[in-house]
Length: 554
Ligand code: NOJ
Image 1 (cartoon, rainbow, N blue to C red):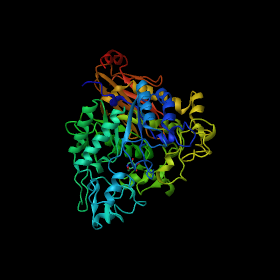
Image 2: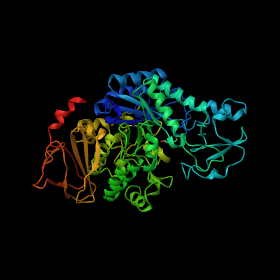
Image 3: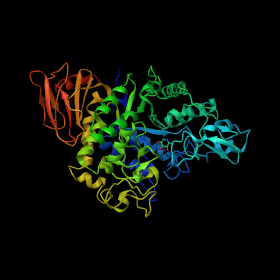
Image 4: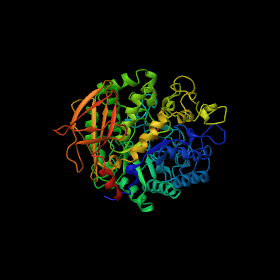
């Protein structure tokens, strides 16, 4: 297999321009500020930046309600600033992915304004209408508790329009060939401006049939192939990272059985079991989820994440498991959202406990796929639960202990900087953690560096090794005659585990510890016995040196 699929060994960092760095003192982050912080990201080891929506938008869903797909919202800068940014990223060898939000538009988008006001408008059929309120109108809301319906009457059109999300986000009629052509045009535009691909929003809804009579929407999977073909024709190394929270049995429909659809998808199935494992200390459902989502095609890749900008969605756990995660990480109603998830950031969920944070991020960086971090993760930033819905985890980046955490010179920022308490900018910030060799930031930097040197994880085959303890997850990766073994103890107590590595080209009897001096030699039976401290983790190379011999061909 050729090895220039850059996304296989990438470290992705997700941020919103709005919350990262304000260069002009208006209280809102911007492209110029972000560009100045690229060296910071580069130094951290980030190889690809994923930008949340920055196009013109009324901002009622934090930019996921776009009113002009071919623009930069003036609050963040200009198209010129954007191109300077992609160029600066390229100079540092970093890629840029951007959000592609084409399931819906803002209700302020000129297409919708034209469609609603004129039955003859060429944009009328770009949206999904009904004369009467469909029977299914009170079903399928994505934001239950906040969103009341999926069909709302428009007083101008005097018809109902379909919206999978909030009522100000009318769904595009994605079956319409004109809409499909426009989606390609949008991709082509941004590709031309220097991006390497897209995080595609709400993919199952983009490809679903929509209409007043649709009860069980069929997916139009051929659309995914069209997107990919177009992209690869325009720019061969561009990718789509799909947001699709689907069941394992449907994974290959999204990747494509011939690997001809999405290159990447977020692994929501694993994400939920990962949180269950962290909450319960039982690694077995996580090991099972890894097996169920084993990648079946060489170019397909999972995006592995802990928390993202939305709630931690626990909707696909069984009720007992879900309750266990709520009890451990979000017991208060104020911490929960949409009847299915937790809206906190990771560090407060884990009470800022360094051992558990290291365990969680060690897992994120070593589960099969490409790690996707979120801004602020590297300094263990907290949240502000006084903010509504998901905004609690979208506060300004904490750079220093200066005014507004060094994010802005303004007196008021778009959302308040977290101040005071255990997670305020006065104590949790980049500048302070840089000076401290034992800080979380320096730990993350080291772990990213090591992860980059283990292409086996991004590229290789992964199996879980049977251990004698259900709290311990032992994974072995193989790629090009190299093997690594990674252990995690999900329990608070120390565990001694015994396991065999299995056959290798190197010396299976020797495990070289990559993060500490705790190497292991197998006994006469070929069994390793390893003691892991509570919440402990170990990264081993099997055999040691053959790694250096075989890497020359990548
Ligand atoms: C998924 C995004 O992650 C979320 O933030 C947004 O609200 C919806 N899609 C609607 O675009």
